[in-house]
Length: 274
Ligand code: HPA
Image 1 (cartoon, rainbow, N blue to C red):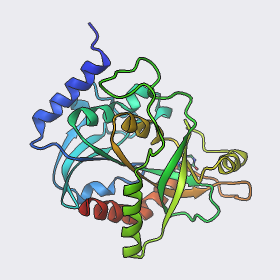
Image 2 (image 1 turned 90 degrees about the horizontal axis):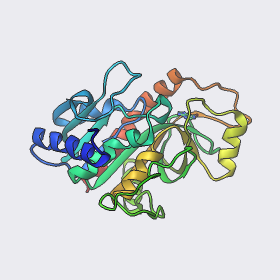
Image 3 (image 1 turned 60 degrees about the vertical axis):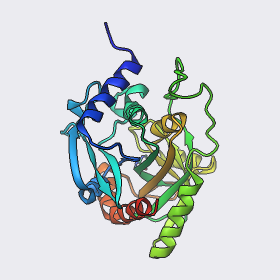
């Protein structure tokens, strides 16, 4: 008989528990072009997604993706190298399955990163933006369907989806480092198209500062799970009615690559001061 969703979460987390000595307190999901942080994780142990029972397997990147367990900023972490995007065809339960496994493992804190297009006129390509809030424009909420009370409440509040304490910590560290750190609202869209000029304009008018194709589903589930969330966007392109540049995946990757030392040092310093 097909296993239930809860059984699949249980089996995946049991498998991981047997492989690792100590449960990390923090999980990190790395966005497009932002995988370099992995190289700073000490004493690391990698587990391929394809080894983990019921874990979705990446289809597009040529490799299956891996979980990296180790130490960053002196703290035990679990990092996801490769995430599951809704535009790839995964359903919302698959996109957010890793977050449920984190919950089952007992992980209390989630750091998420992504590459995003900037609508805020103050932003420059290469900026790092702390996500202060989001607007969910995915066609489906990952919590749609039967609610499992053991995972979280039917109607979770999203009033502080991104921990104010963590945002303040990021600001203090950026000030200390003399690092330019923007704040903004992330608009989550299904993709895979980049926006039309009118869409970038619309997202700005409704209160968005940056737009991307990920993060929101994982953050919703992490909040449902009672986890503390911190999110950053790396601004890889700019959009709006006066902007002539055409965004491409290659450009997004290049800009993310350039900005990631800033992001990595911010996250590492945050972990060190937790
Ligand atoms: N739009 C949507 N997603 C993105 C963008 C963008 O401009 N840049 C990087 N991810």
